[in-house]
Amino acid sequence: MHARESQGSVPCPFCPGNEEKTPPEISAYSSPGRLPNRPGWWVRVVPNKYPALRVEGQIHRTGDHLYDKMDGLGAHEVIIETEDHGKQLEDLSDERLQDVFWTYRDRINDLKKDPRLEYILIFKNRGVAAGASLAHAHSQLIATPMVPIRVKQEMRGADDYYERRGRCIFCDMVQQELAQKVRVVDENPGFVAITPFASRFPFEISVLPKKHRSDFSEIPKSEVIELGRMIKSVFQRLNRVLDNPSYNFVLHDSPLKDSHLEYYHWHIEIMPKLSQTAGFEWGTGFYINPTPPEQAAEYLKEIETIAG
Image 1 (cartoon, rainbow, N blue to C red):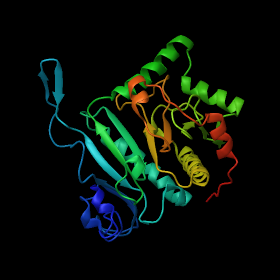
Image 2 (image 1 turned 60 degrees about the vertical axis):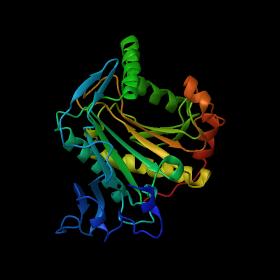
Image 3 (image 1 turned 90 degrees about the vertical axis):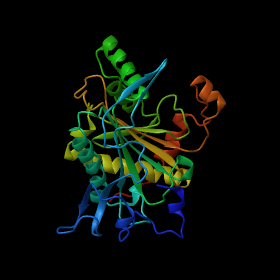
Image 4 (image 1 turned 45 degrees about the horizontal axis):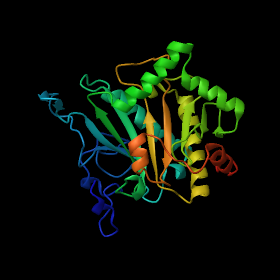
């Protein structure tokens, strides 16, 4: 969506009553008997009006001497997380927050049916500093015809660890963090939130299932409930400590055609936008973090949260 649409003089295209300002919806959680593209929904999925990739077409790969090119085939969707323009994820009831995560699962399972697609990235940008152009709470889904290089690198590292030790590195991480407690922000029966060892950014948080799960699309109902509660807790803490920061939220999942992996563990990364990536970071891949993760965890876990 264009940044100009976020200005107060232009009606928000994501608010109820403005459904005609978006492309026709793909799916929605809504009241019984509601007609498509009408008010009465509480989670709604639409194609991005200005997509990075399009479903139509085929994959055409061509070479240009050293270089390879391919068509921009894929999918780009917007998950409108609430009908209420003034609410964010952490403001939703437990039931409504669970519906957001059920929508993530539903869209992954639906797009899995397309054999051209290899990977699905679900992410959320909140605030101008994080790249958001609209204030209304929403996340995005981009499905690609290849596995992104950063995903390959993460999975290769996890596979190498598994080959050497016979264990999932993420499971080992969960066990160690729960034993040491120094970087644990919160935990519940299904999930743990930590400030990662050697965090790249101040107050960076990872949310991981306690049980080994490689495919988000197979998340059971009991864990959706606990995930919603964990995400609400994390954002309430960040908002109190950092005064409602801009952030990027990224769901790391396994590739669509590599399921039930013993060495990989889906997880969520939340990165508040408190510092800028500059020449040193781009040139080296090293990050300067002025707030040690142990200190960030200490600040965050002192905050009281509100359930419900």
